[in-house]
Length: 135
Image (cartoon, rainbow, N blue to C red):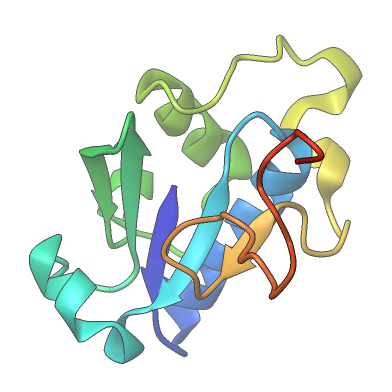
C-alpha cells in the first residue's frame, strides 16, 4: 500500500491509522510518498485528491481509497473501518481479533511504513554482492 500525502490534517489522520495497521499487519508493506515531490508518479497513477491510498498487488494497482469518503467522510473514523476495507481489498489478512488486532500496535512507533523510495529493496553498496556463492 502506498499513501500519497501532503502536510494537511486529513493526510495526518490517514497516516495515524496506517501506522497502527502497519504495526499489526507485518504481512503487508506500507509506504508513504509526498505527492508534490513525486509528480510523475502521482500523475501516472492518476492521483487527484490527497490523501489517496493506492493498493498494489502483484505489481498492479488494484484499488484506491481516495480522500476520506470511504471512511464516512469524517476525520474521526475508527481504525477498524479502514482495516475492514483493506481486508476486503485483499491486502491485509483477517487476524480474527487474536492478540488485539489493529489496536495492538497503537503508539508503537513507525511500524513497517517507509517514506520515499519507489520500491522497498535495499540498495547495494559498493563491494556488496547479491550472490550467494563465494566465487
